[in-house]
Amino acid sequence: MNHPDPEFPEQLTRSEKTKYRLAQSMKECMKTTSVDSITVRQITEHCHLTRQTFYRNFLDKYDLINWYFDKLLLKSFEHMGRGKTISEGLEKKFTYIAKEQLFFAAAFRYDSQNSLREHDFQLIFQFYQDLIREKTGQNPTEEMQFLLEMYCQGSIAMTVKWVLCGMEQSPAELSDLLIQAMPAKLSLLFEQHDILD
Image (cartoon, rainbow, N blue to C red):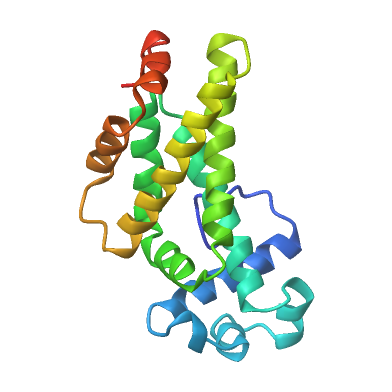
């Protein structure tokens, strides 16, 4: 069976292909049913797999959502890394998230413990720290770490709001707003290295 999502690599193990089939089925169920109401039976019947196969791969539907969210998030950061500037990188990330709006919205909505948001924060915080290290040749100062953490927390909150409120701004508009919201010292650091916009 072909890979359900062309965004992901073709070289997958049999187990990974099964996981993607289940994730694709979950996405289909999300179009008509809330996450809380979706059953494992619905997921497996939709993709013609057995419940035993499901439970060999995932503990429950939330484990499946977490796994697929992680794959999508890593992919969105891969897109972000392809940008020549932070502005372009953010726009690429949000364009990718927009393509997966249904899934991100459902995932953020069900996530009462905020573990998905925290995971997104850890990834973006690490992304910016690595970028600073790469461009300056040194680790961010304690002050810069503080500004960066505050900025990343705010960015995640606004990204979640954007996803859950129907993505009223375009990816480019959201990217511009987040660039404008960047603390002055952080913005200056990125400007000095010609990677802001």
